[in-house]
Image (cartoon, rainbow, N blue to C red; front, side, top):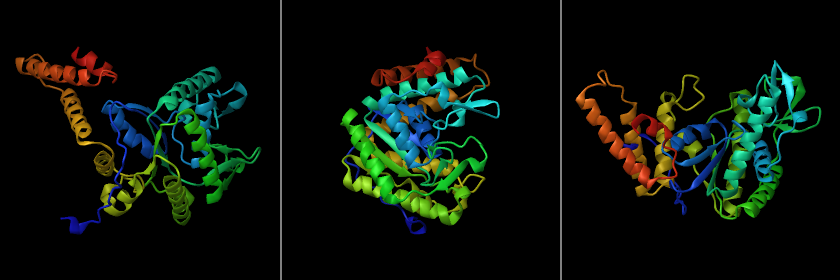
Amino acid sequence: MDQFRTPVLLPDFPEKISHTQRLIGLGSCFIEHIGQRLHALKYVWEENPFGIVYNPLSMASGIRRLLSGALIQVEDLFLHQELWHSWDFHSRYSHPDRDLALEGMNAAIHRAGERLRCADWIVLTFGTAFVYRLVSDDRVVSNCHKVPGTFFERHLPNLESLLTDWEMLLAELRAVNPGIKILVTVSPVRHKSDGFVDNQRSKARLHLLAEHLCRNEEQVYYFPAYEIMMDELRDYRFYATDMIHPGEQAISYIWSRFEEGLMRAETRALNKAIGSLLAGLSHRPFFPETEAHRKHLDQLRQRWLELAALLPEADWSAERIRLG
């Protein structure tokens, strides 16, 4: 019944993602939807070390920090509403104890910096081109932390400044990790706070940035998540209750297209086998003491051992606790 929808054709990606590769993702909340599936399916995955980041300038700044290993200093933190924050980190890193906030942020920098230097893929999801600059020193912030709007200037960078920044960044990244492959997406989530007209202008700028990078840089690829949501799933039943974010059905469908385009058949088969194991483990029996349930666990244990032998570097700690 394809005549009732407009399918988005996927590019012929010359590079594919596999379980043996190391991946890191940065960007908007959409990266976390894909990341949850990658993590559950035992990919070597590091996700949003700074927390959710929406704009490409903040993402570039964060990647530079990971490459340099520059740590957050005490003087970089500020106190607001009884929590210590950094302009470079999401609020999930904020804490009432300044030292604990600093420790958590720097641990994330150290961990993700090591991953980035040896990563096979970096997955980037641009959310909005709009940035917020501190009036006091003109720096672009990654998160406003509910500080009053008078502290910031909202700004839409021109395309040339975004291109220059990202061309320089990719050269810096290649100097450290020459073989890294880059997958760019534009988040289908509409930024209602930008206003719907400005949101469209913002998304257009992000698409032009992505197009330029894919056209002019080696091993940079574009996955059309935005287009799949807008054209294949253009019905409100595919949205969450806020009518802005994709719903679970949409996320699952976009993930299936992600698998289709970026994974070989044997990788998808391994995904299916791991998913089946996880589904079996999620089952909660009414009578766990029965012989039938013990046989069920024995079957799951055997499947787990076979998968663990195929993927010895994966984190199987939760399964080991349950089945070991």
